[in-house]
Length: 379
Image (tube, rainbow, N blue to C red; front, side, top):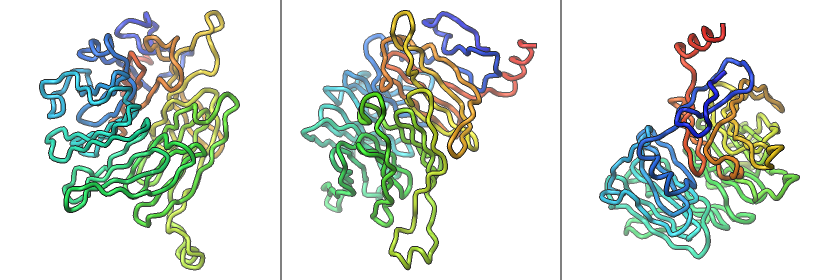
């Protein structure tokens, strides 16, 4: 059982309710982050192996290392509080090399900035709040077209032309606003008000819609859709209180030629419902997930929100086994809703970043030394 400390202390990040051997250990980020959180509230995060990029409700962008110290880049040289937006930052996207970031906001601005050079910076102004922007993972390549995606009432792709102008292409119309986009190789997953779509860039066609049921409490659009790719062909979706794992596979060649169908198909391999609202989903080991959850229950005495939970789940076709669940002591949790929490990860390092408006906690896997210590302490 993890040590139960004062929830507001620097070392207190988690408690568990049962004597179950932990799977994860927790550290609260401090250093320069403390000053930022004393003045502002975090609205979104993007995690890269080189840095953390935070967006705030003040429209600012903060670059930090994985310990919470400020990182100086061409973006914020001499400007520790880089303020590209006038309203909340809704999404940050980083290319795979960590050389460019894209941000969007309720102010209608979409901004792409280079962290090493400003040669390919872009700024677009739309007349509506933009909830989703996504860079091509290969955006850093000079011959890539510097592509990026924007979601409003359509899924739009922008790319640089030979004369350095921007060419826009409608990839798909949407049923209401596009609320989330995740790009992975040739495949793009994106969420509309009906469900999740997958688009194949190689064939320039949609692979279909994964419909989502309207929740009993509220509307589907009241909840953020959480998308993540665990590898090149496996898509993780967590929305409201349902998690779905889909695999993209190639069709039988005879089926493709005889019926004129796309070469790939999206197969749901697991769908199950949780007892909590899903705030984020990330891969762990084979058939295991790390899930950030928000309790549907309220505190019986105060009627305020309970602590968020981080679960390790082993999924089956239509059910799951709970490996372990930790209740997280995030600052100010009593006042937050489900969309105030975010989960991002570095898959290759098994690091999971749990974010609330006033706190960031990092979860990592228990190592052999940690296990030995825990077992000795518990006899």
